[in-house]
Image (cartoon, rainbow, N blue to C red):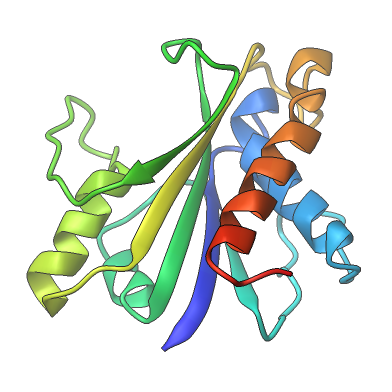
Length: 164
């Protein structure tokens, strides 16, 4: 079983909705790995962890996350969460959505647990997005939150003995 998957999702062409890609890129740089310059490029391989970036979560990902001990989901939020940056543990719980294309980390874990009888230890890092225009650049407000987000994930990884 692999150790850790960091899976970011969002639309990098919609400004702050793509913050997850920027956070994954910052983590690769902190690890001194070659960082992709575009969201269309693959993230580098590392023996401690894997990176994935997608536009959205899909049910098919249950098979992938089932092969990991730990999974950290990274996404933007729109102010419905009090903290600008928040890391929470995620449990499996199927959540119905009014949007047919929207799948939550909790629902993905539920699918994984239903299909495979187990699920990884999981967390969700959520970062506030302020602007969702047509741009690949983060707003100044959200860009300032990226270092804090990276440190929260780093601490989470250290607590699971993935990083020293």
